[in-house]
Image (cartoon, rainbow, N blue to C red):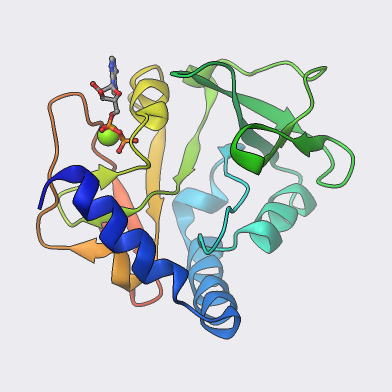
Length: 187
Ligand SMILES: Nc1ncnc2c1ncn2[C@@H]1O[C@H](COP(=O)(O)OP(=O)(O)O)[C@@H](O)[C@H]1O
Ligand SMILES: [Mg+2]
């Protein structure tokens, strides 16, 4: 299967999850993340706003703010690039943006990618070599290429999104770890 057939296959599978399945798995995944030393030691975290049936990290985002950590959310700035923007409040700092996904208001300034300690990376498919398949626009590949070597990256996914080997290209940035409802994998 090539990348685009694979994307459709996974996206269809994930769309079939019930609300209960999404919330049940999302809460297990979020609890796993909260217990990780790499999470607890991170000050500046880039998370995301879940779209469709993506793992629901909204309660985790709230937790990040409650812990006094700094929370960034992606903001699409062009057909190819996104920024990480610090928000202080999940209710007031977000507006509907590209693809119907909530994103930080235009008045808020982006952070320097090199300063980010941890990125929680959504996606469509992942493998246990750190490869990731996104929606096909390469936003995270370009963004992660600008992060520091010290920036830790964790793919966030359901077990159904994990495969032995997924198609990848030289520009695909490998992740350092992956978390699903059944485990935490470091590469
Ligand atoms: N760092 C990069 N520099 C230039 N082009 C890139 C970069 N990363 C990705 N691209 C381009 O973006 C497009 C989508 O990338 P792809 O990896 O297929 O998407 P995704 O990671 O969202 O699944 C490809 O045409 C790829 O060549
Ligand atoms: Mg890619």
